[in-house]
Structure formats: structure tokens, C-alpha cells
Image (cartoon, rainbow over all chains, first blue to last red; front, side, top):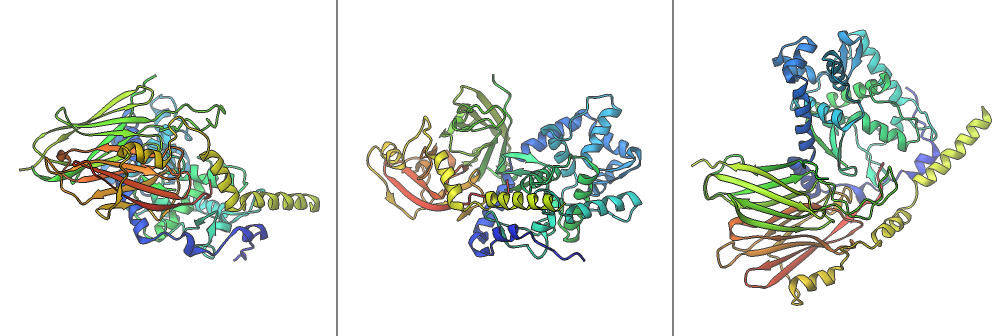
Length: 253
Length: 112
Length: 160
């Protein structure tokens, strides 16, 4: 096990003033209530309309070679290896492939339309447990390993890795006034795509990774790349371990 | 240029009778720009663009009017109560400071 | 390799200094943003005077104002107002005004209610430029005004 070596610089900015910024129960209840009226619901509805143009659940099930009934639990297992595409992919890449198959114009993975569509399709699996099986085949296993490696390997201007801020040792400490969460317990893999309040828009998990990378002075990796998909697989398994059910759209800072 | 604005009305709880007081939630997709922020892409100041007036009506009869200011969050949320008088339709008409007018309706179907 | 590590080291440190900017400096920047003049700018005192026609408003515990103690972010701060007062034909909550004491424009929303509402209730989400008080100013049908205020701590920071 590699010993966690925090760059001295980072240690300076971390504070253990957990009390100061910890959320009170009353505040937590107020923010939880906001989920009932999440502006993202409207974007998810829009995504549903775009999805309808692709043929809805019927077309998706057909593309994946499963029955419509199996769809929710199958969706809960993404990203997964799709033989037809020869890669471990996210739902957004499947939707893109369907567009290509239907002779339609490809929607960019990093676009509000795709974020909305992805959110709608993933929401079909709401309340389900994440069902990623990292031993299902060699492809998903490799994707998981790649994601985990990316998570743990320092790179970029500050010599940080995702682990620098998101390891079990760091959870609860404060960075730039925000208590660092346990990504598994926070159910990140199950609650993104989400409405980001500071951006007032619907964002996906991989898009959030990009924001994080930008802030940590790491070169931003493209959405849909092997590494990003691997990261999503890895982060999703963290939520899976904590048995966090899928709840789309989420609401995040 | 008026874009068709998206909005959503939710009535809670889902099941109610005549005489019950329900919660009417309204969310609209709208920038609610204060007129003091720069567009990140162009560097130009984005002109103020925010919902400034809302009317809630039941079957054409207004029961709540609001004057809204630019301090309200983007993609704003507004919630009031309504005492159910019978079957009908709640309509939310909203205008913004640039003159855009929009409307959203939701049927009210009390049980019993 | 040594030289590159050294430069990276400097970059890392300076970048961290930028990252570790004390909250007071960030608050200064936010203050600058907040003190820019907007077309609707009005102080709380002025707004209170305007809305109450100079009458002012007494503090009342009949107004339940719910806001977070610490707002996760200043862009979307939930506000909930409940007034313990009848909503009858001749005796009802006529208006709920949500105001703030720290933005350029103290006014957030002026909500005119009617007995048809059934309850004196209003909720919304507001933008707060910094730590400040949110005020619920209520007008009753008999022409009297009551108010209550709560402070919201707005954290400036977070990872983008």
C-alpha cells in the first residue's frame, strides 16, 4: 500500500475546523427538501423528450439486446462492457451509438442535451442499487483498475491525486471552507448527474471530474475517454459498496 | 427574442379533497441575471434579465401576485398554498424585465 | 529532472498560495462585486420605509422564517416563511415581503396573498452576496406590518 504523501502545500490549506462548517441537522433537512423541487427535474424532462426521438426505452432495450423489463437493473450497471461497441462505455456513449445507428446527428458528449438525456436514462434506474460487476469480464476489470490507478496517481502542477483530497484519512477535513466528503457514503456514483447550485445547471459525474482536475491543476481528461469511464466505474463502485441507491437528479453544491 | 421557457408546477400532496390546503410549487428555467455579471465567454456585461412579475390564478381568477427582484436565484422556485375549491386549472403567468411573457398550467383534480 | 522538479515545486507552492488565499481577501473581492451599483439598488432601511409607507414594522414571533444557518453556497439559499395568522375574508395575511440586508438591492420578493391561499406561506430561493440577515416583512389586512430576521452565514470558497 503506497503511503499517502501529502504535498506540504496541501497540508497547509487543510484545516480541521470541522465544527465551523459542519452542517446542522436543520440545515441538512432544508437542503434535502430542495430535492423535491430540483430545477434539474425540468432538464431531465427535456432529456426524456430527446430520448423519445431516439425511440425511447423500446429502442434502447433493443440496442442493448435485452427486454424492456430488464432495463432499470441493467442501466444501474453502467458503465459496462458493450460487445457491440467493443468498449466499456457510459450510457451517454450508448445513446450516441444509437444516434449513429439511426443515421442521426451525434450529440456531443459534453453538451447540455447529452447531460439531460443521460440524466433521464439513468433516472429510469432510480431506487435501484448500482449493479457494476467488476469481475464480469476482462474489459470491465481493466476499466476499474485503470480508474482506480487514475484516482490514486499524483499528476499535474500540484502533484496531487484524487486520493490527496478524497482518501479515508482526509474525510471530514476542510478544504476551501468545504468539508471533504467520503465519496462512497456520499453516494457520488448514485447521485450524479446532479444540479450544481454554484453553476445553476445539470452536470454529470465526468463533467464534475473535469472541474476537479482543473482546480487541482491537472490536465483535464476528455469525457468518454477510457480513463474517465474508468474513473466513473471506480467511483460508482464506492457508492455500490455503501449500498447507495440511484437517485437522479441529485442536488450538489 | 422570446425562447419558449420551460417551467414546472407541482401540487402537493398528490391526493387531496375540496377544502384541503395544498402546496403549489412553481419552478421556471430562467437566468435571473442581475445585470452586474460578465459573460465568461465574451467578457461583456450580461444585461439584467429576470422574472419580475408572477400571477397565480385558478380558472382565470388570480389568487396570488408577486413582484420579483433580481436577488432571486437562477432557475427560480416559488411556493404558496392554495385552498382547493373544486376541479379546475391553476395557471401561472410570468413576465420578465425584458418583456418576455410565459405561462404554465396544471389541472387541479380533487377527490371527493 | 532536478530543475523541472524545482520549478514544479515553485509552481505548486505559488498555486497553493493562490488556493490558500485567506477568506478575508476573497471576501474583499466579493465585497467589490457587491458594491457595484445595480439599477434596482435600494437599502433595507429604504425598502422598509417604502413598503410600510414610513410606518415601520414590529418584530413578531408570529412569523416563522426558515433559512439555513450556514448556506452551502450563496447562489441558491432556501427561504421559507410561515405566518401564524388567519386567512379569512376580512382578516388575512395580505403580503409577505422577503428582503435582505446585505445585497445592493434589499428586495427579493413581494408576494401579495389572498384568503384563497388558505395559509400565510411563501417559499423561494435567493442569492446572497455575503453573510447577512434575511428579513420576512409581513403586511396584515388591517394595515399593520410585522417582521422578523435571521442571519445566514455564506461561505465563499469551495472547489469551483
